[in-house]
Image 1 (cartoon, rainbow, N blue to C red):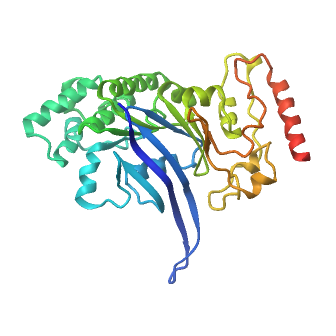
Image 2: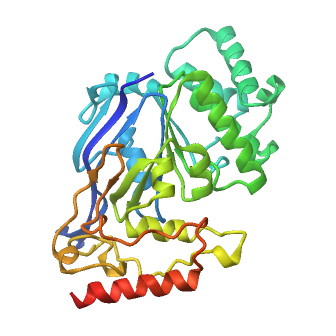
Length: 353
């Protein structure tokens, strides 16, 4: 399969801050998402990564039209759905589904599992009662559960099993796009691999596209085809998984990768964080990352870098991406102290310019 399934251009979401009891007035805004653009191809998995509060989940809800954007365009299967409403939007929701982070909170505890999975079929008027029961049994087997589990309640299952039920519910109406909002972060490590492997198997069988939100880079490395790194509402780096992990070009991406635990302490590159995470109420001007970046210059403080891509689609929003020293990976023979000294010397030279 080829072609773009989901296209996002200049997407923004600003939450106004109001003050006053009688006359409410806007005194500012939280810029949760600030001018994000990307494309998700058919059959592809695009991972959104970044620290908490960077806007990953907001993008997911904007793409599914669960919340309204402040600016920008969302296209699904080539159709502009930014202003879609009413019955057309309801019909579209069959093609776009979501797997939520908390598998217990996203399931109705008063409903049996069979009724939970059958509910989307009823809402979209798909099949009669017998056909829906057969579909529920088919979906339970698809996600590794037994048909008799349809008569149980969510509290009778483990966390991993509940997430399988959530996946079955998302697949019930045969969507093209599934948004996975940190689907394994609430699970034990031993169960995470099972759920990730299930998602990959289902994708290969049904030809799904995933917008995969996560903060665990080990899961992302196993799951994604492309990776988009977010910081304070903006995408700072995007590209094929192999390129982003092997040759990260943005300083923030390098810090994320350097923070991954390594089994060999002598070959481990330590992250060197600088300062505190700025508030989204008043993000820094220019490059949002410049207060914490050891390579920032005056240009970074006054000008916003644009996302520029190379021939393989590896894009970075950094004024000095081509000037940064080579990133030290865990395969390098250089030790962490030597790497830290070399990076500190480079930062000192930049500051003296």
